[in-house]
Amino acid sequence: MTSLWTRCNNCQRISFKQDIIDNKYVCPACNFHFRLSAKERLEILFDDGQYKLLDQHIYPVDSLHFEDSQKYSERLEENQEKTQLPEAVLNAEGTIAGIKVICSALDFGFMGGSMGSVVGEKVTRAVERALKERVPLIIISCSGGARMQEGALSLMQLMKTSSALACLDQAGIPYISVLADPTTGGVTASFAMLGDINIAEPNALIGFAGPRVIEQTIKEKLPKGFQRSEFLLKHGMLDDVVERKNLRSYLIRALRLFLNRYQ
Figure 1 (tube, rainbow, N blue to C red):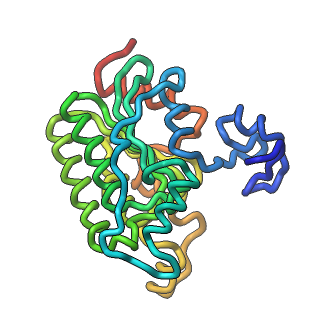
Figure 2: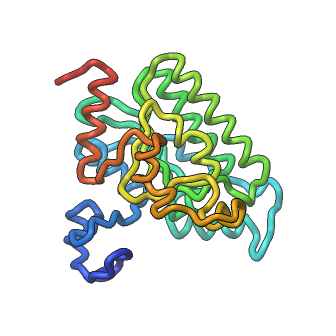
């Protein structure tokens, strides 16, 4: 949103940009949730929008010298320049209602939030830091899945992140997973669905394979709303669907419940 006005992707209504921002990037007319950057998500959640970034010194490399229509190394440079991020995830620590938490937030603007070896490493480091400091972990997923340019190195991150979360679970440390639009592929198949509670924003696309691929595979028409948050909630794949304006207060209640802190 670079001008004073913006058009809603859902209802097509043109609204004043500041009205969208003041409403936490949600359309006032139809409640469509605009996609946020990782930094914007962290600012919304942490007390006074203040947090400390972690693991910013880790950068991806083109280990396989992958090239399709463009060299992977060039794609990385372009996305780093576009987003001003070293990779598709930000790790941060701060407080939510005075409760210290570790948070990882994926940024769809960086190669579709895809999970390569560095994203897997940073998510794992966030889990390990939460374990070491014995503080709750929150991961906000917004991703197209595993990063094809890294091949098997990317697929290994599913096991790596899941194994780290198993240690966190054994230690009894809370992990809340927040799924935004979209959360698909290897991210859904690993850490995104392993929370003590899994919650999603309204109408978020959540799944492994895309609807078109599934229809072509099973040769059947999928039901309306398939792979959307509300459909998954109805069928027991999510614990709740939470509007963005209520997300921070929801997390506060959940954290207090997990930690037996009611004030």
